[in-house]
Amino acid sequence: MPVGETDNARAYASLKQAVLSGGFKSGEIVTLRALATRLAIGDTPVREAVKRLISEGAFEGLPNRSARVPLLDRRAIQQILDLRIMLESNAAALAAQNITLHQIEQLRSLHKAMGTAVEADDSNAYGNLNMAFHFEIYRIADNKTLATLIEALWLRMAPFVSRTRSLIMSDADQAWDVACGNHEALLIAMQARDAEAARSAMRADLSALSKIEGYWDGIEDGTLK
Image (cartoon, rainbow, N blue to C red; front, side, top):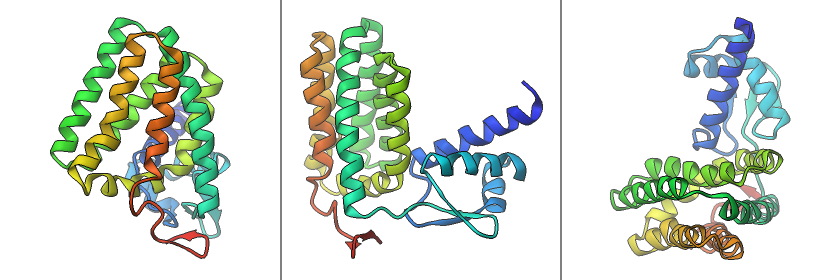
């Protein structure tokens, strides 16, 4: 792979990871120069990475070499969440059919680490572990097209999801139930190779988020503030 392509791939992977991990806020405006400095990568690779992420819906292009994280209204958030529930619950069912004992233990290790993060009130660690847990399931599902669609939805919703982590952590009992309870049900379903139970557990996990008190707060006139 030529050096330029390597730099482009590195810039894209780094910037995509920053979006997925909640590194940007809804409506945030960023310049290409600021992103290049933040990622310690040249302007040209960053420009190409931003163009690619604009096409994937993670950013919106603006004049003067800048971009903005999209502002999502309530209808858009609910539509994305509905699609996530449909696709990710299907991926969980597929994973339950494919999973090995070693992979179950890997998921249990992530689950245990998430519990530790919740107890420590470490929302950033929890967010990273939660993403790793989910995407390991989608990798085990072994359907690349499905995984690509799921990642695209996570990219669009990541800034809003990162905002909800503080809501999850605001109540200790709620934090465990929402952040870890449904994951335990997922693991039990995976252990039993029960595809429908895994589908239901993933649906419950994703549906629980929008029921958290304050989840929709800050959305006025159809726009997240």
